[in-house]
Image 1 (spheres, rainbow, N blue to C red):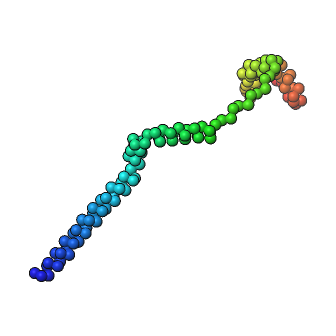
Image 2 (image 1 turned 120 degrees about the vertical axis):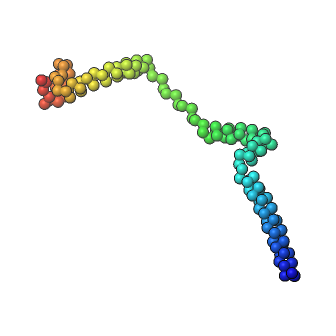
Image 3 (image 1 turned 90 degrees about the vertical axis):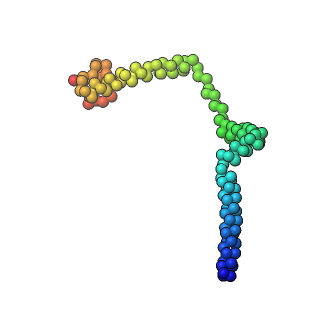
Amino acid sequence: MDRKSPDSREIQRLIELSADARACLRGEVCALRRRLDVPARLRDSLQHHPASWLFGSLASGLAASWVFRRKPPTPKPARAIPAKMLGVAWRASQPLVKIWLGNQVKNWLAGQPLPEPASRWLSRLSPTFKSR
């Protein structure tokens, strides 16, 4: 019987040691969870220090606006009225010229004879061109 009593004391000591280790691990796990729970930490910080968050966001917004500021566009020199009118006329005639040129290319690819003004104009450009 004497042999069992030292073993039981040793077992009791080991049981207490494991209980203490579990309690220590439980505390460390809780502390680690708190450290890794970023949303809860942010929420807590926002609730306890709202002024520092407000001033920090204001300062970072101002810094970002200074860093990413656009340079004002350089003004283009003003054009004279005849140059403006010529530009307007050119812009207005572009769709008509595009349609006319597209029709001419389509007719040429289809092998149809070109109208007289176009064939005369093309004959000046290439000496070997013959109208049908």
